[in-house]
Image (cartoon, rainbow, N blue to C red; front, side, top):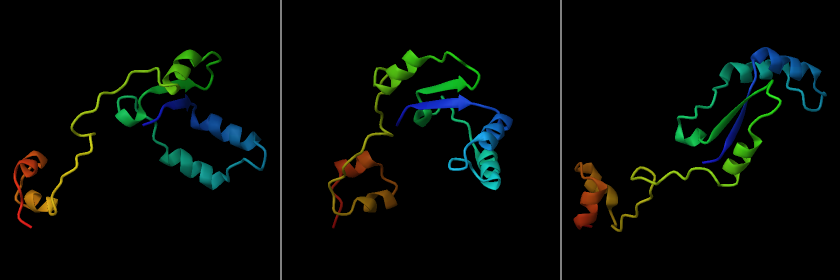
Length: 114
């Protein structure tokens, strides 16, 4: 999980910037249009897009201190839960229990036959 800085800019502004860019860094027009078409804005409610700082392209004074603090790890620490913790199952055939509809906890409590 990483920090994201999203610069919100309308597609027309992106097209203008691209047309004014030096040839070495300019996107071909068809590729730029594909990128614009396929672009999906990040969502701060999603764990993988958090923390998210959205900076409007016309903002001359973004929250640099907040962005810096998030990137330096001074933000909120997300507590691990059962879905994000790796579990080691010490059996030779861990999948055998799952075929019977057992949970990971049930497999841990029961020795499965080899």
